[in-house]
Amino acid sequence: MENREVNWMKSGCKRRIELPEELLAEIVARLPFISITRFKSVCKGWRSLIESTYFRHLFVFAHRNSSSSWSLVCGTFGWSVEEMAGFYGCKRYGLPRRLGSYIPPHGLVDKHKIVACTDGLVLLQTVTKRETFSVGSPVLRQWVQLPPHPWKGISSSVLAIGLVTRVEDGVVMEYKVVCMDIDYRWEVESLILEIYSSLTGTWTRKKVRCPSLIVSLSYKRCLSLKKMLHWLDTHYRCRSSVGAIVAYDVYADDDEQQFRIIPFPDQKACFRRAYTTSGGFLVCINKIHLLLRLWRLEEYTSDSGRWQLTQEINLTSFGCDHHYFPVAMHPSETHITYMGNPEKALVSIDLKTHKLTLHTKSSAYRDTMVYHYLDTVYVSVEASFDHDVFYTPQFTLPTWMGSVPRSPSI
Image (cartoon, rainbow, N blue to C red; front, top):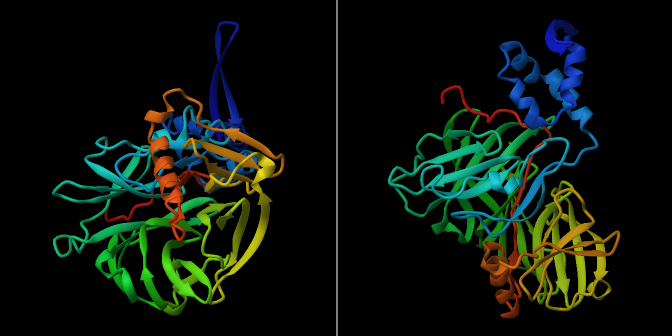
């Protein structure tokens, strides 16, 4: 390792001190990520050190007990987003404001709509005549415009429906964008997908067979987890189960293992439910009258998956009545769940401490997007749309934010 020169002032004199690179790296690695990124501009040597695998491992170890920043953003993505709840004051990243505020509003990056987000990356689709896709890191302010989509001008019903990442040692190494022709989402046994890879910089068309008939694919509620995309089929019927999760493994080599249809765990039809992620698992939240059940998907390998019931709670112990409905889970704390109530407000319930917290206290709250989103959900609940499944996107950051992956050809 080389020595690095550090200058400081003492008694009005400028002194030059040489520090071993190992010691300097250990000192800098304890700083928040947002501070470390500024050191990249000092010189090429600092940039090389900070971007090294050695330094990344030091940073991850130094912040191993620190929570990561995250946001719950209201609604399925569209023209703009608003944060419902979140955490940004962590030592790992040191972000000065809420994570959701970094997602660019409509019009800032051309005229676009927000399609998906995962592991700190956001997928944008422009809606001008020269329709394009862009993937980027709002926190790092890095954006990559993808090459033209091969279906452009052929079918107006082709939509970008998902963004999935390949993460190694906490770093996003590759991402894939998945597009589908939504004309073929009703009662189909196979799907034709267009997939873009940041590794190759090209689009690839792929026909994928489904293990059983997909009745109605809800492409707008797409969830990314463990290199897989998840959609909802709310009209799926299997024995007494109503609704299923359609999981697609984007990176699987075996075509027969790419698609899985996983029925929801509870077999009663009339309940309120949401699906989300928490602690690295896909979680289904079911509410039957005043009973709240949390199911965790343990494995995908079997034909119908394997669900485990992790919590069963009577909501009356928290002062909740039957009007409360499930919204989401905390991304990492598996004992914290989020609920909506008749006042269209968001509350969190800590299942360990039995503490209920109100997250929307502003007098101007009724004018916010969060209020109108929860109002829409509440109306559907009161209308007894028994088979609907609610999904609230989570915007989270990986263990380490490297540059946005891009093909050498871009």
